[in-house]
Image (cartoon, rainbow over all chains, first blue to last red; front, side):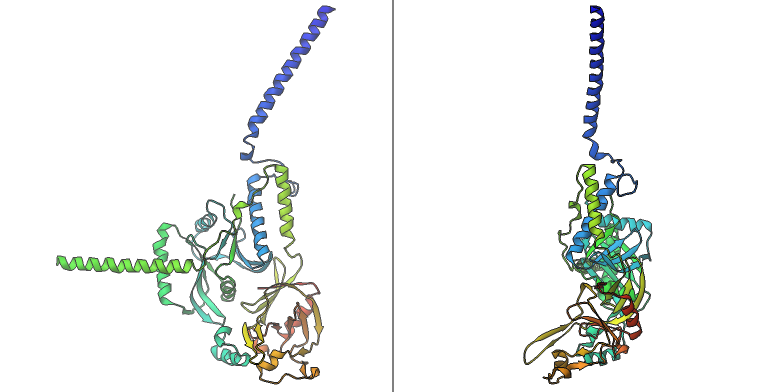
Length: 243
Length: 216
């Protein structure tokens, strides 16, 4: 009987030791993996994503984009969205789309677009930039000067202030040699031949140092809106955000 | 011969240097008309480390953004091109030519009162709808025409000027008709938005009280 108890006690102790060891090894493994958890994608289902797997990098990018847009909404001013997912130029006001036009690339290829996106976001994944410069190459008057002269005198306003010029071609600059060149199919009068020539030469000179120029074609009337509604200093948001 | 070559080379080098300098100055001047600030740093936004907390934070952020996206149809007034659109977030249903403010100023030489004839920019809501509106001529209308401001209030009213309908979006500003339809497309108004009579009739039937009006 005593022998039996001894045997029982021994087997219980052995089992307890065995389970303790397994638990200790398991705990050690969990602790060692826990340190690297942040580096691995978290594969838990996202409740709102309707069965989509939760991906930390995607979520961080989306969150950065949402917060950036919310900060622009808060400013109360219109902002430009370069939507490379839908290839559209969008002007938004307080989160609502007020103007939108497809980005039809006149020059370059998908590689150029990718270079532009990469350069825009840089190493720090910047989503918001402000327009640092703008240059109108050539434009054409939308309304005949004779009409404007009559209207100007009637409403007591300088006729030049009433003229809305349809742009033939203009550039938007974001610094870091990021340029969006917009072209329409009308022929206008050059605004400054000298500056135009300097920019053309600059385009060739800067190219080897990593310039990202996107050239898009646009309807003249829509070009007028884009040119006038994008003042220097305007905030611009890029989509989609890179991870 | 050798001296001539040296002179030619020097001239070419100097001209090239001047040209490159001018190109750099011009390009730099154009691309830095505005100094970029660091106020809009999107890299500072990060989710909490815990997965569940991160999912919750992201859901809240999505909801916060969704609140600003209009769910119904709304009016957009493009003052840059003098266009008025009836649209939703994804589609444009109508686009009409309109007229917006001149941006001009008027100062009364006697009282030194000042008026700026600009269409306000921002987000508004349809706050009134008036059929067959009468225009109450404000003081500036008389000052602009070099006329005497009437003492009798009833002399101020004009039944023709605003067309058949007026849709108010606050602070005395309206989308209304005009007797000068030939001037649509040019910025000639004192701040209100003029629309052609047929287009105005359609907008009148579509826009309800509370409909958003975005002006940019």
